[in-house]
Image (cartoon, rainbow, N blue to C red; front, side, top):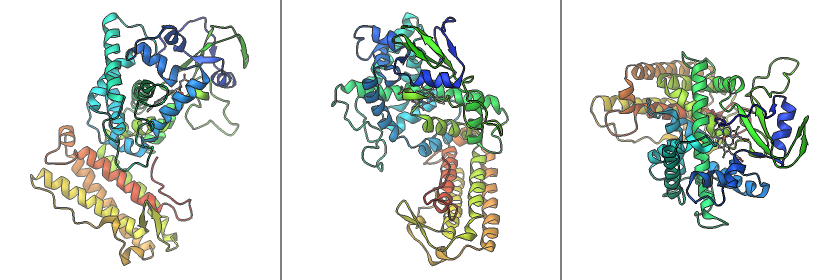
Length: 460
Ligand code: HEM
């Protein structure tokens, strides 16, 4: 999010307490809301209309709450795990901004996600108030108009199995409420907000780890990058009336800048904080509602570069959990309408690795993969219910580590073209690897750590 006109005379807040006071204060509203609102009745479907309509730049508390609730309802349909897997399986080579928006548009069920992504990238150029030459300004207006047409009413439910009200829409059909176009503006707003910031987080992470992911994986790297090198560095507020805020005396109309990286709380006495910069996703009423989705997309894009590591990493995580299963009390766990046990998790993990490897090999050999006759997790066999012993763990480790290596060797032998434009029918091999890794996390997480809170543990 670049600031087009960073006034040197604007106070720049670097103390955490002052930054929180600024971001929490109702008389300090995001810029360029004023400029956008100042343009009398911008034509619906123009860039000025978008900026005047999204939660992001809405100062009035009531209107902001209404618009933000719509944005949050749209986000509720965007499962971070699905986004991470989709990003990890997406083809290399495209602009990350385009991929981020395309994946979000797909999950939202919008028609023609590629065209949506192209339009959003065009809109981003002027969304934060940047000066555009007439040709780019016209292109941005046309892009907003095309997005309005595509988002006024989703073409299809985002995903068939979503619970009611979590289908990526805001619970309206775009024609109810105070203003149907306002609902569409929030959907466009989600995409535009996600575009630059998420791609920039990925860029900063690649810069921080040019040789690939560190041992802790994408989550550890992203937490570090969000703390050291946040993608959004400045938050801008305009003062509506004279006010004393934190240690600042502000005059009506004055613009104040919050320095995100500098405004961190004091390190605790026993060492440096290890979480993201507390303001990397903002604070107060306008704090980012898309944080989980942003981190999931960024993590998936980083993992995409090394599909072999996705599979071996998932095997290692599953075995890490399996090491605790010798303490299992023998009671099957119910997760997502299915029964789970340690032996069943190991069975499913091994079968999943074998099944998709067989599919991949068949497609490479130009054969049709075997038809699917697995009973998978729908069946629970007597063997699934047996105690999980130290010997079982040893055997599982030997089996799964070897299977992981076969996968890694095979994936490592394929070019990007083979991974992304894979032979035969079905998912690309890169997406297959991401799917296998996600499934391993799912089955192992469904059993979790005996004694820990129930429910899938997996990765966020
Ligand atoms: C690394 C990626 C991202 C970063 C660093 C980021 C950061 C931020 C920050 C700092 C704000 C607050 C701005 C302010 O107070 O002036 C914000 C607002 C917002 N973000 Fe994000 N964001 C990211 C990704 C996303 C994604 C993926 C989405 C949606 C899918 C999203 C949706 C929004 C929305 C709708 C707002 C406006 C909220 C409001 O005004 O109530 N962001 N973001």
